[in-house]
Each structure stands twice: as C-alpha cells, then as structure tokens.
Amino acid sequence: MKLGRNFTNTFVLDVLTEDDRNKILDGTYSMFSMNALGLMKFKTNIEFQIEKAKSIGLDHVELDCDVPNPYPDFSKKRRQDIKAFAKEKGITLSIHLPYSGMGVGPSVASIQELDRSYAVKLQKEYVDFAEDIGSVNLIMHPSGTIPFYYISDFYVKQFTEAVVKSFTEIGRYAVDKGMNLHIENNVSFDGLFVEPEECIDIVDKVRANGVKIYFNFDIGHWITRAEKGKEIPAVPEEKLKIIPADYICEFHLNDFIPSTISADKQFTFHPPLHTESGPLKKTNLEGYWKILKEKNPNVLILLETAFKKLDQVKDRENIIKSETAYIREIFK
Image 1 (cartoon, one colour):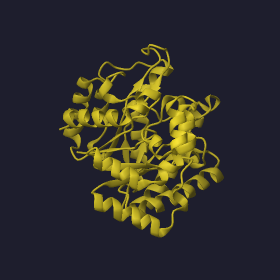
Image 2 (cartoon, one colour):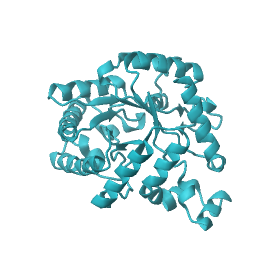
Image 3 (cartoon, helix red, strand yellow):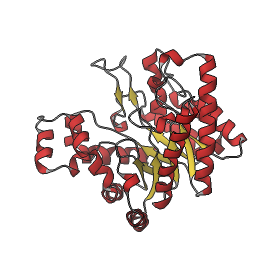
C-alpha cells in the first residue's frame, strides 16, 4: 500500500506574502480569500508539495488540475524538471483532471456532441501534461452538476452514453501513454454517478470497448448521499465489497460530516480523519483496510483533508502529520 495526498488548501497559507498571511491569521481576510490569494501560487510550486509530502512520510502527491491552475502553460523544460525532482525525492505523482463547473472539463458528460468533444480535447491537454511530469494515474469525474430538470431515465441514458464515449476516448489516449485512467464517483449534489454501481457500470462499458480504466471509489463523496435523505449504513466500508479487485488501483479516502449529525447543522467536506468527527471512525477504517487489502494490497490510498476553520490552518502541520500517522498505523 502506498499513501499519498492531494493537499487541497492545507498549506496554501505557506505560500502567501507575510502581509496576506497575517491578514488571514488575524481574521481580516476570510478562508476563501486565502485560496483566492494563494491557490495558484501553491499549485505552481510543485516542488514545495513534493518536499512537504516527503517530510511527513508520504509516498505520493496528486496534483489538482481544476480551475484555476497553471499547468497548461508549463514549458517542456519545467515539466521535465518536475519529473526529475519527484524521482529524486522518491515521490510518485498523479493528476486529478478538471472537474468543477468553473471550467470546460465536466462537459465530458454533455449530450451536446460539440461540447463533449471540446471537453475531451481539453482533458487530453492535461493528459499530455501528466505524461510529461511522469504521472502514473489520472482521476476524472464523470460529469459536473446535472440540473434537476434533466433527471429522467431518458436523459440519464444519454448522459451515460456520453460519459462512456468520453472515458473510452480519454482512457485509450492515457493507456497509450502508460497511465491509468480512473472514474471517481461524484458527490450527491451533482445529481448523477454518485453510487458505486453507476461507476462500475461505466467501467464495464468502457472495458467492453477495449479500454482498461479503473474505479476510484471516494467513500466521503458517497457519504454525501445523506444530504439527499439517503441512508448511510453503520458500516459504510462494506460498500467496497461490490467493487471487482481488478477495478482497483487508486482510492481517495476522506470523510463527510452530514448536517444531520453536525452541531451547527452545517455539512463539512473532508474533515481530518483522526478526529473521528464524521461517520468514519477508527473501527470503520480498520474494516475498510481489511476489505481493501484482500482485494488489492498494492492500492494507492490518497488522503484529501481540507480545512474549513482558521484554527485548523494555524495548526496545519500538526493536523496533517497526526492524520498521516493515524492512517499509517491503521493500514500497516
């Protein structure tokens, strides 16, 4: 088992100017302002992310290509330098392809062929970037948010056909470059492709087209179904049992605090796992690993903790190190 991270916003503060950093820390600027001021700087400094991963005992870094990001503008030399630096430090890399409604990427599910084809063309640009820096895996969501008025059996069939076509095209392009493409389940707010069964169906169909892709099951994304009034089992990790072993290569591991169990009645994405503030307790993670290691002990587990509170940003180093040690101990 290899352990990695998408650092999300956890160390964005470190790349800010001293003045901006102080304004975040004293509350003059909001947490969203921290991202607005520093996210592009953080994404640009891949060496910082690699060094940080190495310092806290990780094996892998996943780069976030969602909008905004600087990666398409990186020169060939810059990309080669990143690849060499990662290899020197013993850190492998993967790429999360664009996924939010701020960009074109999610239109891989569009039932308008012109839009879908442009989205595929864009995603291939990021596949080229991934190849240049030596990425091993690619992660892609099957769509952005589907408006509620499109949720009918007839539209769902059309969306599914578009997604299969897009994953077949991008997957073949990735395989030819020696990388593994994964479909990652959406959050419940996106409307479609939330359930593992839906994503497994996509993998089945793409593989039937002769392209080997994988399923990246994000259990935290699946738990968001609670916000749509759906049940979260007491043992949510049991859902892993339906995933074929041959479909497993990389998994995202994070939690979600539903509004129904939150003290302030607000949901929270990606809380630190070691605080056990969401449904995933230590016993659940032990069960998660027991199931997973029987299917594929060589899986890459990627943590995606994100900070929502200023106190977390102030204690960022300790939180991330403690969570990493906690997972290492459970998944030893």
